[in-house]
Length: 308
Image 1 (cartoon, rainbow, N blue to C red):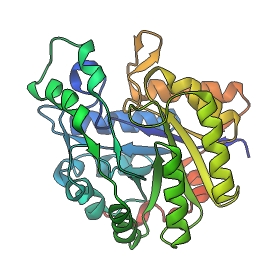
Image 2 (cartoon, helix red, strand yellow; image 1 turned 60 degrees about the vertical axis):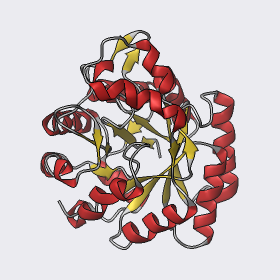
Image 3 (cartoon, rainbow, N blue to C red; image 1 turned 180 degrees about the horizontal axis):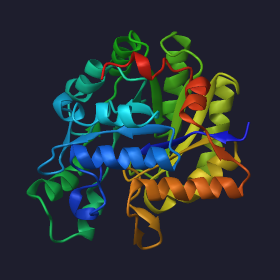
C-alpha cells in the first residue's frame, strides 16, 4: 500500500533529435540516462533503440546489445523492451530485439490505430537530419498495425520465455481487447495495463477520460487481477500521472512521452522527470516502489532469467 511503480520511457520512437538536445540517441546516452533514471526512482525502464549516427528509430538487436547489458549490470531496474518500435516498422522488425533478449517485460500495443505525429513538424525549421521532417509528415498516412493475430503471436511467442507485458491501451476499445485475450487465456493475472492519453488518433487527454478508462478497466478485469498505470503525451504528462497516483494507479514519465519538465522548459534528462514525480508522490504521502516490489506486484520472472 502506498507504493507506486514509476516507469521511465527513455527515448521512444516519436520525438526526433532536433526537438531536444537531451533526447538520448547513442547506446551510451541511452545507458547513461537509463541508469540515472533508475537511481532517481524508476523501477521500470521502457527502452527503444536509435541509429547512433542519425537518431532514427531502429529495431536492430545489435544496437540494443550495446546498452542492455550495461543497464542490467549497473541497475536493478526491470528492463522493458518495446515491441512497438515506431509506427512505420514491420511487426517482424519490432519483435527482433524482444525475441533475442527475452526480457522480463515488453510493451504491447493492444490495437491498430492512426498515430499522428505530423502536427509536430510545423514547430521546427532547421532539422539536424534529413529523415526527421519526412518521418513526421508521413504519419498522416500511418496505420500503426497491431491486429488480433499480431497480438496473439506476440503474446504466445514471447510469453513462452516468461516475458510479461505492458499492455498499452490508447483507447477504450483496447481495454476490451485485453479482456478478450484474458478470456482466451493468453494473458494471465497479474497483468499490467498502461493507459495512454493525448496521442493524436487515440483517446484525448481529458481527466474525464482517465476516470472513464479506469472505471472500465475495473469493470472488465476486477480490482485484484491487474495493475494499471497512466502516461500522457506532452504538456499533459505530470497532471495526468499525478491524478493516476491519487486514484491508486502507477505512473510513467520519460522523454518518449514528453520533452518538457514544466511550461516552456525542456527537461534536461529523463532523471529530472523521474525526480519530479518522486517529489510529487512524496507530497501525496506515496512512495516509489523498488524494482523488487514492482516485480512482486507484476509477477515478473526476475532479472536473472533474461538473455543479455
